[in-house]
Amino acid sequence: MAAITFFFFIISILLLAGMIYNILKHLQPGFYPPKRVLKQRVRLMAVGGILFGLLGFICMWIFN
Image: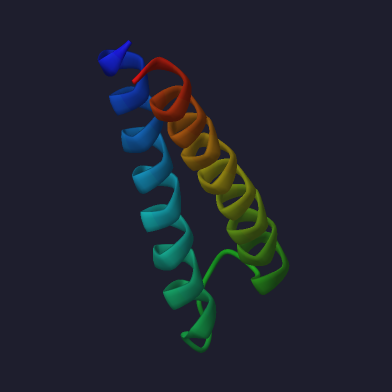
């Protein structure tokens, strides 16, 4: 079970890092893709990162 919990935390960290990267791209002027697309990516990665983080904490709480 430790491997599954580790997997959830790694995916969560990667998604949150991707969210931060897209936020920084959004703040730069004149960047492609459009700001609308970057906002959608940020939302999707934030939700995914939070969900995987919660799954990791739930697995850690239940199985340890």
